[in-house]
Image (cartoon, rainbow, N blue to C red; front, side, top):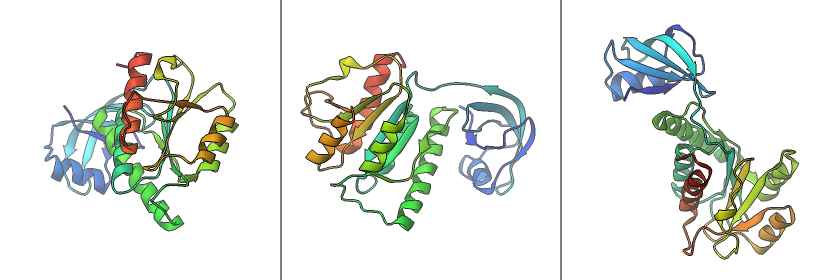
Length: 242
């Protein structure tokens, strides 16, 4: 498998990589002059190239051809994940990217233990975006999912209700009656995942009043960081992505 790197400025001809990508290619991956390299721009295009200069600060790849390639899910899926502690958010971002989520929105829920001040929230956003980029490169995606800034529950809900296109929203609830067998085969889907302690009654009622339905994923209670991967996999099976 050839190395895959993200570079927004993708064009045929010699391409000088930034220091981070150069170091990763020349030092971490130990690529040699003449090795094949794949460059993608995060917007659906992928270039095939050859490493011409294996410099750890300014590696040069000769891009020979560029194609527009889609490896995206048939459904546009948004994961709205309540903030969770430790490296759980990192896991959610990584696995959601690998499994085809189009957008990930971190939500500051009422019961979220993790509280982020504006400065720290910005740093975490940059960190999560870097994780999504690396996961997209590793998984062969040509589009990097959008990682939105942290929103309050009401901000996220307002944004969802303002979308004009037909859409489906599910609030993951281990005690809900509805199951994934009613998954629509087309149209945007939003998956709302609560924090470790779950959604509050007020959040659940507000979401359901806005047209978001409760949904359960089997008879077992899943950890918050597990839900996105399970839901995305189940939806992929349902809509023919696997």
